Every structure is written in C-alpha cells, then in structure tokens.
Image (cartoon, rainbow, N blue to C red):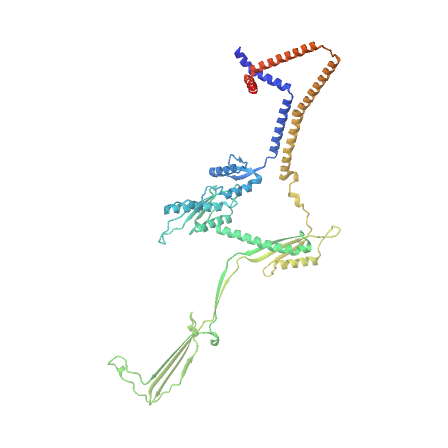
Length: 570
C-alpha cells in the first residue's frame, strides 16, 4: 500500500495542480500574457540587433586572446566568424575600438619591432645584441610593408655579414621578403620596385639587386630586366599625361563657344624618349694674330765680339787661330719674320722670329749677334656640349568633333564654314600646332547621338541600400505579425474565457438571489441556530478534510503553519 501510495502521489499532485489551474482562470491568463510579452521582447531585441562587422581577421592566438580580454573588460559584445578566424563587433564601434586597441598596442602581430630593445637586460653579450637588433629591424620592415594595400602579411629575412677590415673580403648584406597578398590583388612592377628600394634604403650597405621578393604562390617578383619595363610604364604614363593635358586644354577653350558636352577631342602624341648627348669641338687656325691671345713669349739674344776661342781636339790643326780676313765683309741685317702654320700642336701656334748679324771690322775683329724670339698664341677653339631633352614631342595628331548647335525650336543646325575655321584656329593655338614638326589637325562637325547616362545604373529595387531597408522593414513586420498572432491565439481567448466565466458567475448569483427571494422561508430562532451550527460543523469537517489531505500531501506546510501559530501565541 505504501509503495502504491508513493507512486500515485506525483500523479495526484499533477492532477491537483491542473485542477487548481482550471479552477483559477487568472493563472493561465498570466502565463499566456507573460509568454507573449517575453516573445515580443525577444523579437524586438532581435529586430534591434546591431549589425556586426569584422574588427580584426587572421590574428594569432596570442593577439586574439588579448583582444578578447580587452573587449570583455570594456563590456563590448563580440562574435566570431569564419570558424574563429575573425572577431566581429557592432558596426558603429569598429573604428572606435580599433583606435582604442591600437593605443594599447594591439594587435602586436607575429613580428617584433624595436620594442624588443627595451627588454634588454644588463650584461647581454654583443652577439645577442646584434641578433636582437636584426630581429627588430626585420619586424619593423615587415610592419612597414604590411601597411601597403595589396599586402596582407609580410616576412623579412636579413643576411648581415660580419664586417671585415679588408676591402676585398667585405660582403654586402642581402634580404629576402615573402609577401602574402590580399585575395584577388597583385603587385605591379612599380610597387615591387618600391618595396625593393624601401628595404634597400632601410638597411645600410644593402644594394637593391640583393633584395628578393616572393609571393605566397612562390612566384619570384624581382626579375632581371625590370628596369626597362619600369621605364616603359613611366613612358606610357608620361605620354598619357601629355595627351590628357592637351585634350583638356582644347575642350576648355572650346566649351564656352559650343557648350559643355558638345565637343570631344582626342590627342595622339608621338614622344621621343631617347637620351642623347652631343659634344662638338671646333678649331679656327691661321687667325689674325692681333685678335689672338698670347699664351707665352720667349726672347733669346746672343752677342759675340772677337774671334772664337781656340778649341777642338788637342794637337790637331783645328787649334790654330783663323787668319785675318783680306777684305771686310758686311752682311746686311736679315730678318726672318713669319708664322709657322705647320707647327701647330695641342697647345697652340708658334711664330718664330730670328735675326742674325755678323760684322767684321778691321780694327775690332770678328763680331756676331743672334736674336731668337718665339711667341705662342692660344688656339681659337670652341667646345659645345649639348644634352637633348628626354620626352620631347615629335608629332601631334588631334581630332576634334563638334556637335550641331541647337536652335530655339530644338532643331539641330550645322556650323558654318567660318565657325569651323574659327574653331580650327583656336584648336591650333591651344595644341601648339607646329607645321615643321608634322602636326595634323582634323575638325569635324557632326550631330551627337543622345545616350542615356544613367543606363548603366541598377533600378532602385535592385540596389543594395533598398534591399537592406527592405530586410529591416521585414524584421519589424515579422515582429508585428507574431505579436498579432499571440494576441489572437493566446491572450484574447483567455480574456474572452475570463469574461464569460465572470458573466456566468454573475448570472448564477443573480438566479440564486432570485430563487432565495422567491422561496424565502421564515425560520424560527432555534431552527436558524441549528442550521448555523450544522453549517459550521460542515465547514469544520470540510476544513479538517482539507487539512488531512494537505498533511498527507505536504506535511512540511502543516508543520510550518503550526510553528507560526505557536510563535504567535507565545
């Protein structure tokens, strides 16, 4: 019996609880109202849920943990996306959080910079100091390269040879850079050259040729012969700039005449990018001496009076003095003045003047005089060094199309010959027309075909902004529909049931009151007292029965009631 009673007790409790709910209609109404309010609040919060955007992606575990800790301390909600590869926060707080986290040095990244030098301890060896410096330099270079748009991650390896006292044994450092590019992005030759020169400039003694760049696919980005390709790119850009400048100049000068949008010009420029240098040297010999500058002048005079002293080989006939002349000999003064044109050299021209006079007198004896004069003039030389400009325009070809002018009634009208001539003259002046250079100009007057400039735009119902607004409105519409369904299916039936029960109770009370009033029986005092005692006895029995059931079902409640009574009496 005890086992059966114990097994039936939970069932009895459930049945009794259901009976109590049915007996008290307020409880289902409260439960339905609370459920409806909870569902509506949840839907409103869902509709107001902020849009999450990526704060950081592809973080290391250390940086991710540090960022999550900071977000938790700042009470910022966050989510994970791409299997934990990205941290997402509300869209309106993305930039604020990036600035606040950057102030705290987050994310630090895989590479370390010069902050590594702050952690050096006293007594560190020179080798460790050199290694730390190299690591810090590699980290700083990697951070700098990662600031570029197409680059996602970068790794830099430096090979720093040991310095040597001997020049022949000195080796230049080298660098290897591995780039992880953004999806769908690539580096052109100019960007590759910029990274190479940036790394080369950051390391002392590192030539640009010793820098190697490799992307994430293993493709070598630094190849030989890139200088020519870079030059070609620069040439194309310069040619495009020249053509665009001339085109804008033509359209700006013709726009006030024919109207904006009624003239189109195309320019083709043939530019000479050859690098030329020319040195020219001219000589002008046999010039007038009076107009020439004297470089040097040398005068040599030799006078000798009397015979020559005996000389020669001892014991020979040459030692005897010469006999006296039988007759005087007068040699007239001879002058040799001239210019030796054939004696030109790198230093200049020489002109020699020689005068020799020999006079013999009977009384004075032999007399000789010699005078040599040499004058060197500067060579009349002209040296001209000419360096041609790179990027000179060799030839221009311009084509101009002018639209018909519109009359007052909207009909198009072609331009007259004088108007076309005027436009052609203005175009020649604007483009810098040179006939010797071979420039060409062609001006055409034709009616333009009307085109819809907005034809390429999507309709408003296909634009992303409209779709976003539609989704936001759909969320709120869903909230309203759910709230209406809860009101129609949960809350309203309970209210109607409650109203019907109240109405039914009022009708029963009214009927009982009418019956009591119609069948009122006058009882004596004794009968009334007996009836009152019987009612009290019946109510006492009912109460005692309820107390027994309560004590059987939950004795703890009865104990608590008795304890309360005793405490009140004491």
